[in-house]
Amino acid sequence: MCSLVLSFLPTEAWPIVIAANRDERLDRPWDPPARFWPGITAGRDRLAGGTWLGVNHHGVIAALLNRTGSLGPAPGKSSRGDLPLIALRATTAAAAADRISTLDAGSYRSFNMLIADAGGGFLIRGLESGAPQVAPVTQGITMITAGDPNDPANPRIARYKPRFEAAPRPDPSTNDWSGWIALLADQSAPAETTLNVAPRDGFGTVSSSLIALAPQATLFHFASGPPDRAAFVAVGLGAAP
Image (cartoon, rainbow, N blue to C red; front, side):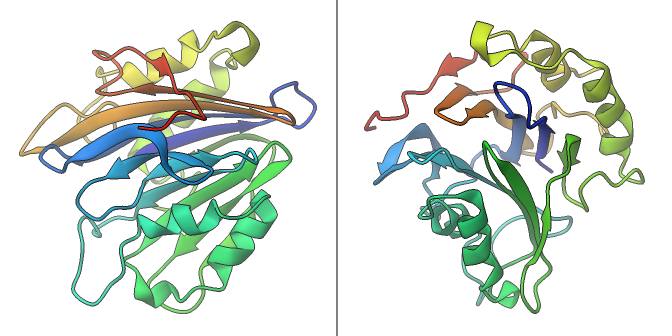
């Protein structure tokens, strides 16, 4: 179960700040973020060829999370890793959300998505039938895991959303993400609630991302391992692999 936290405060210099841990099979090969696709900087899943999170040169971010019970591919289903790439061909978050909303959710295993730009964002649920469900991001903290966003019945959200709300908001202008990084790296919680999943049965937290969006700027920092052991480094948004 991956985890993503977003703070949306439209009057701030950086209206959108995002932190995410990716939990995955440890033997599933991947590449750290680079410009593998024209105008898109994202991590690359070597197995299926898509991505779990990326940004484009218009300042749009798209992130994908699997819903409960849907880890891995399924016969007859398209790869969910294609969905962020479809979204990131758009020039605004609204246009990107429109692209996803026209797809058949039944073509994919169940998923959650976040699509955002500096003006706001959209939460999308694909429930394996009908059209994906789209809702706007509200101001404040939003947390997404493998169930519905901000669901207080989810143990991970119940534990960590209040902690992110109480922590100092990151200041991308000074590169101060310390309060959020400490929460991303935390392993003090029980296994079913922790954000930083220790390796077990071939599964665990494999990487972490920090992203900030302003009207004329995008920042992307990436840790190529669990955030308690791997350092965050700046991603060159125009860099080829």
